[in-house]
Image (tube, rainbow, N blue to C red; front, top):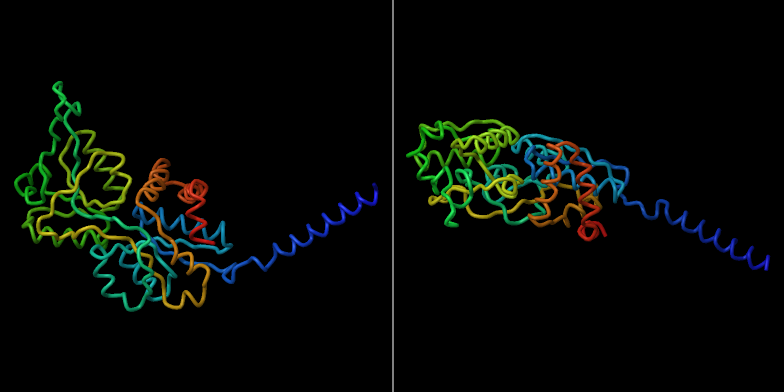
Length: 307
């Protein structure tokens, strides 16, 4: 009996030693211990995808990730010049078309990591008082226009302003083109940030003031409020698009496992929307912790990207 017990214990210890040996460098990636420099903007979508990639790299692949926040133009330049290794926030084909033309030959485009984007001018689609009248018919929104062509007729109600984000963002360049195309010479495009735009939008909706902003999908604001894109008959803002992953040249050679993750990374707008809402719940604080939460909720997706 004692011999059998000693045999079992000995076999267990030998097996344990084998597992400990296997848990060593054999399972570490060639990129382990390196640092990936990931450029992103302060857009909610960009913050979400950047923090998710960082979490997967660090928690699943033992690769450190340094996030670098900057404007859209600088983001493209940084990857092209090798000051950043990658970005997951290239809005194509319309929004970042000028940056793609300038830097496309100096980077490696890995294709879409999300499909179904849209940009344009957005207004609240909120009714006065109750959503429906006693008859059950939907009350009219307090801003009762549908097209960019109608902005001029109500310029004074909008205080001659279109509220936008940082000046070099692709959507801002497109908005300037739209202002020229639709003759909105007496409007001023306000340059601010996503945080400022959302604050102004929230205030306008609470007080039922007229406002038009630069907007895009996916974005958590469309889940928070009833909003609508103004029709764009001249098609200045283009149709639907996608968000691409773009990396510097030679990243596949230098960090093959990190490159493979970036190449495989793809998610749906609803999945991004969930992470953006979780980040928004804490007013933008602790996005990395929210990315870890997303990983726990979607183990299958993470496995597809990393196995």
